[in-house]
Amino acid sequence: MRSRAGTLRTGERSVRDASSPRGYGRRSTDRPGGDRRSVPLEPLLTAAGALLVGFLLSVGLSAGREAARVQNERKDELIALVDTRQTRAEALGAQLEQLRSEVAAAESRAAEGLPLLQVQVAEVEAAAGLTPVQGPGLELRFADATTACPTGRAEDCRIQDVDLQLAVNTLFSLGSEAVAVNGERVISTTAIRSAGGSILVNYRVLTSPYEVQAIGDAGALEEGIADSSLTSDFEVWRDVYGLGFAVAAGDELEVPAFTGSVRLRAATVDLDNGPDVDPPAGAAAARRDTG
Image 1 (cartoon, rainbow, N blue to C red):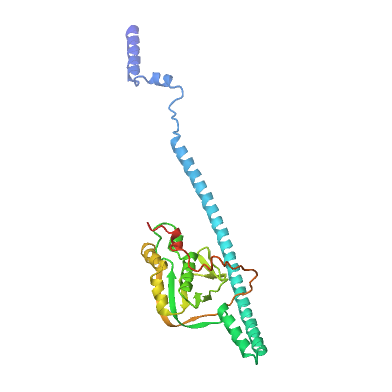
Image 2: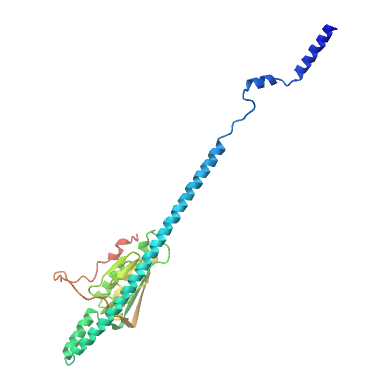
């Protein structure tokens, strides 16, 4: 009985051992840390990178907004300054006109009884461009392109100072008595210069379109302009760059008097070469490559 019971107990132990999962003891012994798992680093790195990029973008946007704000403030200041200077210039121009009227009245009173002197003064003023001129003539119209410039250079598709210089010199060389650009009388001391996207004539800012009026023999002026390098150049530039160019004759054009200062500090006359009123053909084309 004892041995059978022992055998039975031994058999029960064997059954209990056999019912346990295979290798359970080995797993608990082989993995000292139990069933803990390691956390992957890739999601953490991705989240950190996204936060860093977002922070940098936020800082960049803030800096951009601040720079734009400063630029806008500076732009507003410059616009206000230009407006103030233009208003001042207009006031000085009106004062100049009043003083000229007073001087003309004083000259008239002083020249009373001296008709020859009056005639000489009138001739000098007319030659100097100090009196308005009316009569037949020619009008040239220039305009900047209204579409994107095909060369990528904005100056190629804008009317420049050399274009107006060539037009004025060509008209004078064809016998024009008086010439004006957008109402600014051109005299011997007139400067035509570029100023950013605008052009200065008599130190006044002019913008496109530009109208050049000339008093003289309308037929001769029209024929001369048609045969000039100015027209041949602008016919090409009108097609290539979109520049505006038109010529029209008129029976009753009016060129105003010069209203600027006529004080001349120094001048020399080149007796050997003579006056240069007709620039070389294609002078204005040097900056535009039509090839």
